[in-house]
Image (cartoon, rainbow, N blue to C red; front, side):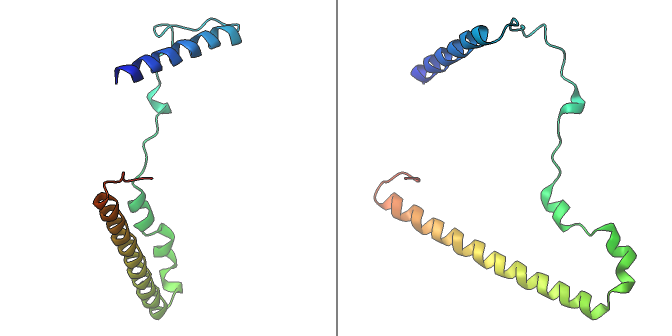
Length: 111
């Protein structure tokens, strides 16, 4: 850990020295920088909620789609979700088997 810290500090010093020779302007200090504007920070939306929410247009166009078609869409969506879940479960089982195999021979988790 101590060696890594020394290595990082050496790389930081080298980068800072390189910066002083490449650019003509002086490197500003931390106190000279303007304060950060909170508007520039991004708040990530909940992806699952975005993917599963019903679009506003669905309510307006609901009367154009026959009820049987909506039922078929729901059934196909459920079937697709089941297939995806089975694939995820299979991958998870294979990952567990591989992890067990590697642990059996005391090998690292990634080669």
